[in-house]
Image 1 (spheres, rainbow, N blue to C red):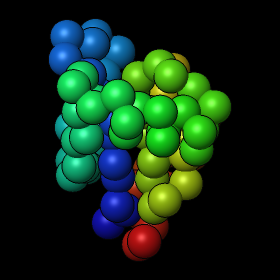
Image 2 (image 1 turned 180 degrees about the horizontal axis):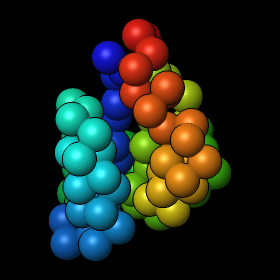
Image 3 (image 1 turned 30 degrees about the vertical axis):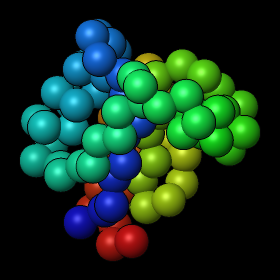
Length: 86
């Protein structure tokens, strides 16, 4: 199974939706909460160019946020990513 990392913040509805989608797939993921960690948020911004959350990485590859995750699922591309070993 894939290694999934979700960068999130408290009270983020899009973060919750992304986690719910992954939960329906039976995927396990690591959450990194950026709420009180501006240094980590800045490092992530330097890595992806974005300050929004969620930011989702699958096997080390940035796949985007909630909308990108849903688009991958609708295109039939999410399940193969989740099945791939890191």
